[in-house]
Length: 400
Ligand SMILES: *Cc1c(COP(=O)(O)O)cnc(C)c1O
Image 1 (cartoon, rainbow, N blue to C red):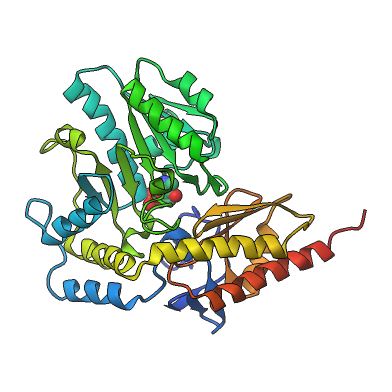
Image 2 (image 1 turned 90 degrees about the vertical axis):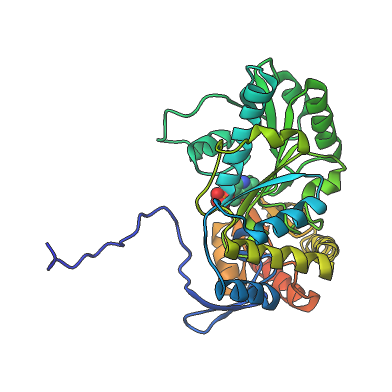
């Protein structure tokens, strides 16, 4: 059949793609194949937190690429050691397992939670409580952990041992914990689920409850971590200490890397041979992540993201005050959401046409994720374009 010209794409249609092809990026600017310029307020979904083509990260990566790419985890990898030291020195965590994605980091978290109880404590605990509207990944265990029906459709049977409770509802978690529960897995801000920050008193009560019940608190910081919310890790806003934390998205600024971090008492739950990954923490992936963490720390970028995030929230609240299509403007640091009264799909596309990139979080929320390196004038230009699209949408509303 080689003469037959294939009309269809050679790829599975897993993504509904925007009709735009990006060819170049510099800081918070992107250019498409038509030469059109965009201000990037989505960062490849919270990934390129330091912007595109970051000189310091690029240099680290290039130096390592000229030396050594991969040797396997059968050898010592000094960059892994160095990155793990950076991460543990700047968090409440003591040990790190490296992998390649968010879902893998959460798989590792689920596995270590189960193994800790089954091998170290000798207890029959394996159930994990997660929240409705959460997002934890696309592997079988992590899509089961995800509290959204739509990601599970057609993938039965699912692994056992997950239950779901409404977010920001402490009584619901209290009621869901039983003798088989080993952990609570939770996002500090629900990202995919509509940019919903956890309430302070709620997360503190969840942490307290986990301690009382002797179960583990797993913070999924895959979207909120690495400076995104105005702290290196979002749990710091809440003055709690999770037992396990997972990272991925922003950690390599676009170079794939994930990490599962745990407290000292969990160390022996992952004994030699109990878990592993061929590519986890290669010399090059860890070089990129070292560049990212060193840059954030030395340039105080998280603090800046918090200040500009608050400023953005005020800017949007001021300019969209009493806008009939806007229900709520919320977020933490540079993880911002504009909740609307109807689907935002059309407006998101209009914003792209206006030269500003944002994405949806659920049907009705416009999600704004600027690079933590963006400067205020460029940010203001981008936000003014968002406001302009929403003002036009208001004018086009039928008068009742
Ligand atoms: C994106 C995301 C994941 C999944 O990460 P992948 O790298 O796509 O596997 C898990 N949890 C949260 C909170 C996320 O935002």
